[in-house]
Length: 547
Image 1 (tube, rainbow, N blue to C red):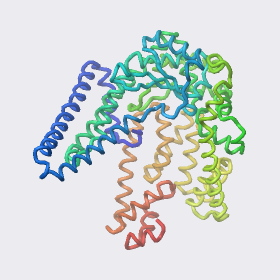
Image 2 (image 1 turned 90 degrees about the vertical axis):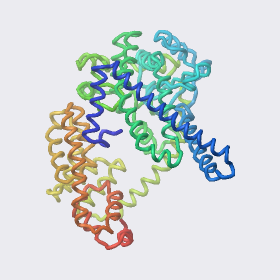
Image 3 (image 1 turned 60 degrees about the horizontal axis):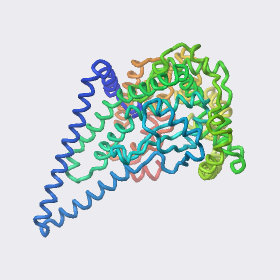
């Protein structure tokens, strides 16, 4: 759940779960056990109802045709949904790294598993696109069939040195040693059952309970998942030492901005060399691009100061690293990036595998990019040379940004601010960019204050201001301001809808909803502009006006 999809009450519910777990961990786990028992009991009752219906069908098959059809259709749908959910494997369609091809990798993994007290890893897969590593398990509840799976992202391998890779392996195998994959698999079976079960009127009656049950499971599991992450981090320190843990965390923080694969591949497509450039080499070059010392310091300062929303899995960086000293962490910023060379033999050892997996995706993305760029250029060319309204200016800015012509977009926005100094929409767009690019929390503070006042004046602006505002508040640890923003967004949206509805007849309410959906990305929406657009007497007339 995104932090902006909730209310203050929901946010505080997550906070209470975290504090309750810290204060009384045993009682908390007992409550979680009772919750699982509740799900089992309700599931047994539901199966008992199904068994009763089946018995009725067996006793009087001739008089139960409709009931038989009902059961067959609903049980078939339930089985299909359940199997679909459980058959979604994270490693599907990923290339496998076999032990006979990469013996040094398997030797390192198995030694780390033994040091962590984890069972052996049966298979290793390479994810060409993900800046991440993960462990999973096939058949988690069947010991004789259970298979432990490790997935390594190629961008991650390209970013790490050998020590960082060892730390990553120790973290992931720590999850296996602590049975997190088995417990997670069991939880998946429970969630999958309640998500897929479909028995017509019976599940209709159960729906309020089902929604509440799934929400409560997610809520109570959140602090335990954070504890699991900290325990996995402790595995790194226990096996390889605190310096390996900190190097691993620093590399993750510093290289994450360069790890956006879409940007890497976009640069290949824009250069027109999609057929000749190796995607693997481009990813490796992006991940090993030099991060200036001052940039590294600024990123680490922000990361060490930032808090993490209570519903997210990973704890704050300072908690994971055991320090908030920037200088101490900055010492690991220049760690070598030679994991591929040390473990796989050479920098281009995996290029053929990665290129083969990415080229179909790259070809499709290149075609979509060319088509989209042509459409945007055509739309840009058809716009009037002189913009008369803030909406037109912002539409041009949006197109220029989509075309990656950001300097030109800034110039258009700057000129628009000069032409329309009173436009809240243009001011909000400018402030969002300034806040996102602020060099420090102090520099961003007055910008955030002004943005918040704009959102209070025109609630519809929340759709663009909320992202930069929340990122800023998380960075400075302003939890109460996040809660105030949640209140402002919630009540502001309701206020806008009430003001709009007051100007519309009942037959126009659907028109208003359609307009809000269609124009949710327009900065200049206000109560008056919405009401003036939705003036026709009928929904049909509204649609004819291309809403």
